[in-house]
Length: 259
Figure 1 (cartoon, rainbow, N blue to C red):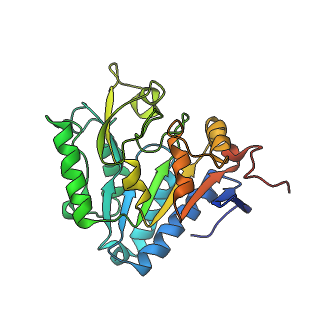
Figure 2 (cartoon, helix red, strand yellow):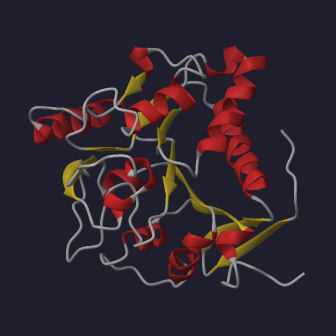
Figure 3 (cartoon, rainbow, N blue to C red):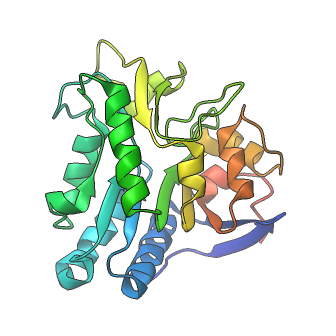
């Protein structure tokens, strides 16, 4: 699973950032990172995001599973968030996305996966259940995050205040335009998500950022200013957070050095 493309590593005032020439190279770095950690800790708790950005990383993990299935035999997986109010099994749900891209390809059995119920009759109760599970089985060893165009991480949206624990979150309009929801006539108005304190208690964090549309968001993240109006900025408070991005996302921001 060797890297392709030239890698640039920059310390942006303390937040580790690695920029790669391509999305493929970025994804290979993320997959290799996870495999190294899993080798050291076979029962590792991996907190995962759905959507397009981590897709290739998951494919590469599945390829590794094909040749080394025993390496993943004790891996535990926690879903980071979910769209609220969708029918169970809907292709737009995060659970279904993760099932097809990660859980089934890695042979993750039901007892090794914990996730939200998108159609829960009582979303608040579902959040409390996840919180209790995490308190008993955590902390998270590796948390895989994506970066929203408005700076959200998981479904922690920009606001005057940030909810620290697992909670039901009102979705920003930009989040309701997410690519996963493009075929839905009626977009969800809320989500279920881990809170910022849950994320920051993770032992290690990987933030994956890919594509030109994420360039403004990444550029803002490079400023060492922590604010609830840009939730991703809280990663500056974590002792072991790494940003992996491709050149399209890095653009002319401070994470890129001239050749």
